[in-house]
Image (cartoon, rainbow, N blue to C red):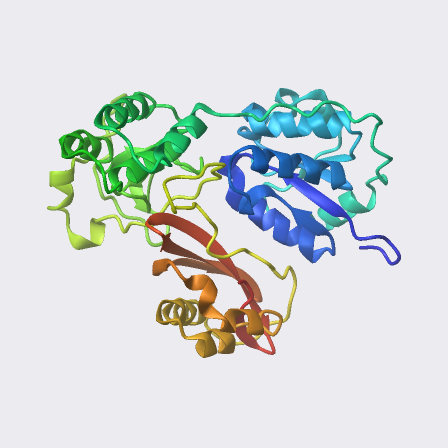
Amino acid sequence: MRAGQMALHVFISYARKDQARATQLRADVHQLGHAVWFDQDVSGGHQWWSTILQQIRDCHVFVFVLSPYSVTSRACLAELNYAEVLRRPILPIMVRSVNPSTAPAVVANTQIIDYTNRTTDTVFSLLNGFNRMPRPGPLPQPLPPEPAIPTSYLNAYAERLGSPELTYSAQMELLAQLRAQLNNEEDQATILQLLVALRDRADLARALLPDLDEALAPGWRFDPEGDFERRWWGGRGFTSQVWKDGRAIDERGPEFAAVPAPAAGGAMPLIQPHQLATMPASQRPIAHPGRSKLPLVIGVGVAVAAVVTVLLVVLLGGSSSGSPDSVAQQFVNAMNARDGNTLASLACARVKDEVRDVSGLQGVSNIQLVGVNAGDSSGTFTISATFDGVNERHDLSLIKEDGEWRVCSL
């Protein structure tokens, strides 16, 4: 940020499948000295939408995360249109390759920052992009009408699942409706989570178990991140096993062929549950939950809530020795043990006091280290956890501080 330039209040609009890239973008923009907001921490419903619209009214810059998913997202397009009628400065940032002409004119006709390959040059492009943004003018008066909440049919299902009691006929109807939508690529990951929530209800009718277990059976599904052709669904969550270039590989480690490639022109094979039990241990998928941007509340007392929030990713730093993998694993072990002192010893100075208080881990269980991605001086690691019976996956940041790897997220 140039000397004397004000810190900006930045709103980031992104599609559900771009959440991981939007989270990284938020960390980079925050490191440039700007305050950043997106709806990762807001639950569903009318209050969720009202909060988003207020944040758009308050922002100095509206960032539209450009991808093949955002240009077709009802929520993203509604947010973009509202920012335009409010005359908020709009900065498009492309995170996946897409023809800009498929986006609304306000994006297509604006200089777009290419963030598809995050490099040092990308950081300078971000810096220059924010430096050249005009100061926002006053809001139009009277304020234009607020756009209607982009309610998905899934919200109605989630609200029904939140009922304290569901009759047998209501459960049967819900199951039939959700199963009918399972081939919907855009919403499949959310539908699977709704089916898991139905499966976990204490009042579930036993007669529905066979159909529910069939719907949730392990197999290849649409990748909720959109990065691969398919991703393995383990029965309760997505795994690190993905389908790419005609074979199954583990995205966390060396490639291996867990299933044979399909014949030319043939359909992708589906491994059945009984086949999974006979696979070699090294080839069985290791379950970790998929990420999704869910404006939903599922079940009584079951919140799809963030266990942790990514607070900082350092862009440039010095070099020193240390093992980010070891620090990440120790941090996860200490979270499971509710050992606040160890958490504090592994944390950077900025969050040391916060992580010492482990009360925020109440209701969180089965915390596991999924993977570590670190460079010379900064990086992230991914954890999976169960919060009141709901599986979630989250990224935490790593930095080098005084020559030692430290966790710098809450």
